[in-house]
Length: 146
Image (tube, rainbow, N blue to C red; front, side):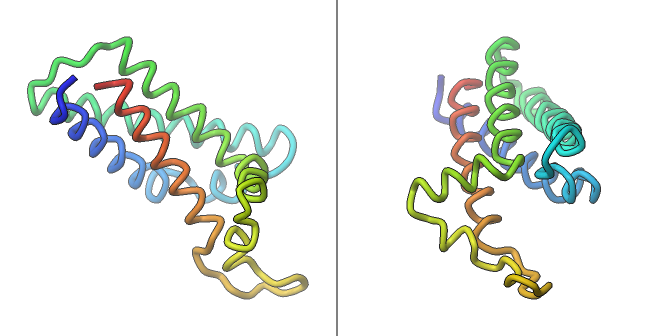
């Protein structure tokens, strides 16, 4: 693995992540993916499928454009790691439990509406922890792929 290959793969995954999480994901998926039961699981799975497809297009497009010969099995393994960890985080409860375990529960709650109110409609601590969790796993996925 070369550092340049790793860097190119990571950038492709990071860009795909931004596009898939903020442009490709439907409002229904965003609203429902953390809901309990099958409706939430299905919404999250649908998001992860389009997320992973976006990542595959980005990685393959980058590899073809730059003439990089990536191993199909390593690409599949890296994207599987990304998909599985993305699903876990986007179901919400596991990420919240991890935040509590790490002592970040107050940060996780930043920007959340106060009880009985619909205020603080901002991207807060839960969003920041979600994104940083995803970025850490994109790093791992890029190492696997490269």
